[in-house]
Length: 74
Image (tube, rainbow, N blue to C red; front, side, top):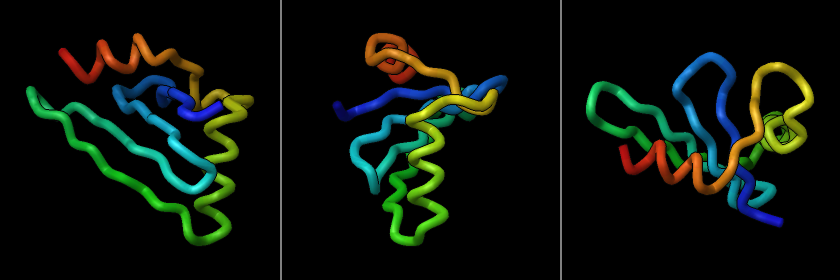
């Protein structure tokens, strides 16, 4: 089931959802990757994770582990 991989539509921001309460947000700034580990404690944060997993709106695109790894390696 976990992890899930998502990409923010229109931006170079990727997500690795590792549990129902934790995800990693990865952005590229120049030649550097910035990784933020988010632990969802409050209900709105948990809803955000559910929204990312569902990928039903136009904000998040489903991705694969291979595409995610390619982004991280570049």
